[in-house]
Length: 178
Image: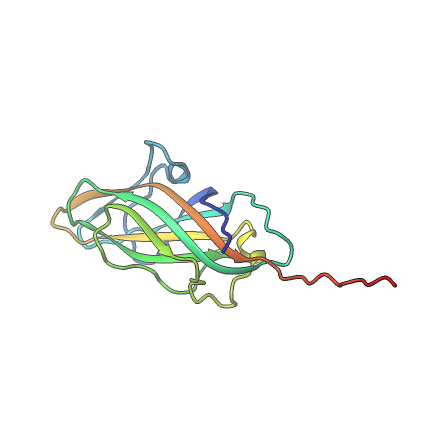
C-alpha cells in the first residue's frame, strides 16, 4: 500500500481546553525535528491546553486514490520519570477534534505512533484525501501531569503525519482494430 512518507505540519498553535492549566511555549518548535521543542509547565494533577499542528506540507496524491489510514509520529519527552501521560489525542478538521481519542495514559517519554495504515480514527464523516490536504487538517494533544512533582514540564520535539492510500484501479479499454 503506498504512503506519503513522513510529512511535516506547517502551522502550530496553543488552543484552550476547558479546565486546563499552563501555557504552551514555543509551539512552532513542534513542527521540526531538531533540538528545539514546545514546552508546557503545569502543576500536579493538571492537564494542559491543546498543542495543535495543522496544514500538512504539500503532497501530490494520484488522481482517484482513496485514503486507507492516517498515522501520527510524535517525539515527546520529560525529565521527570512517570510524571506525564497523554490525556487527549485527536485528529483535527475545521478547528474541531474528530474521531477516536488515541490517548493511552502511558508515560510520556520517547517516540509514539498513533493510528496506522488502516486506521481512519473513526472520523465522521470518514476522512478522504480532500480532508487531509485541507489546511485545517491536523493533530492535537493535551497532556496530564499525574506525577509526584508539583511543578514539572513536558516537551514536544516533533510531530509528523503519514497518509496511507490505495491507487485508483482505472481500467483502460481494449481497442481491437480489424
